[in-house]
Amino acid sequence: MAMVKKKPFIFQIVGYQNSGKTTLIEQVIRRLKANGKRTVVIKHHGHGGKPSLDEDKDSFRHVKAGAAAALVEGDGRLILHAEKQEWSLDEKIAMATCLNPDLILLEGHKYEEFPKAVLIRKVDDLQLLHELSNIMVPFYWDKQLQLNGFYIKDQAGVEWLVSYLLKKIEDGKTEL
Image: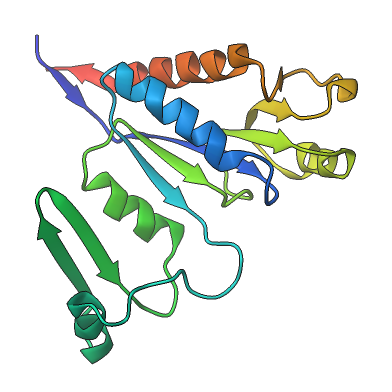
């Protein structure tokens, strides 16, 4: 029987700035890729202002002239440059879904309702455990916090998360 995928599973990695989100995501992506899974990451640029773009490139000039988007492809690399006043998370997920991933990882967007891992760097960050919903696992930096989760440098935490994600990806498939 052929297996056909439904929508990709969506999972969040959240925490305050410099809590280790990107490093954790890199580790998870490497392990998922080794398991043959495609991952797309949507990062929330939470530092204010626009992410840096090279303004002398044609794609920037096209968008500046009024194009809704510009796609540039070369040697297998595809770059999408699109600008508008604001992008909803639903719009970003719809774009990411077009790439046929098994998983969409959201870096940030902490108050969304998707299942998530939360990174706790210091005692002040503990408030996130009460403010956020759908937390599957916390990762913590201070061993004295004794949270029910994983110390950030313990590879068992990464392995647990990868196993959880692989199961959710498999659960999203259906037989034809």
